[in-house]
Length: 245
Figure (cartoon, one colour):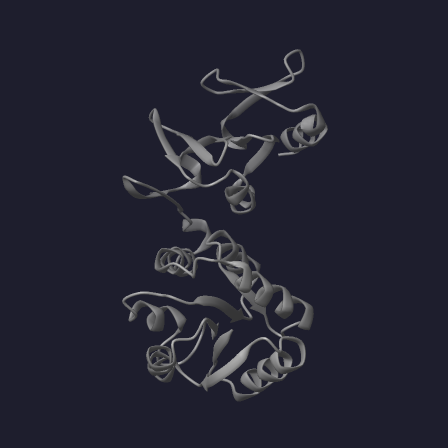
């Protein structure tokens, strides 16, 4: 794979290059770029398969750089020292990252994943990530995209989510419903940090809408009287979460 390294810190570029030479000989480093302006020229001229890109750079950060491209036809692996909330946002956008200081095993895993992926990084994924990172966690809105467009929904308006095959059905306040082509698992990690509870392999419920636990039904009853089944293997976890909220 032909690769470009983009990072404003010389030490970080050198460490990544050495690790790639030692552990990922299948990666050919075409150029090391110290800012987004140089990276744009390198991407246009060299047509890399893979770009390692630091998120925060002076002058033009990773998002400013990528937004100037008409298309992204390569894989992106972000290198970052961001906190855990930002890491969750990166994962949710289905993008790969390496946390600084970079670990050799994680580097090999990320490169191997990029090699196996047929479709390169999508511009929409980058836009979603930028949206998540630019807002404070308390102002977080979930981006739900389907054929109708992209919906920005506060977690407080999501009553519960139901996974059906490779689709997720969102049941919202004011009798609204949105369906999108992502699995429930893709939403679990980020929503569970906003008061959601996995009660069944196909159900993710917002705890603020749960009124009571029904032992006779092994289910939770919502404020609107909707009954959602709780799987037996999750019963104890659900009860502990509800009684200790």
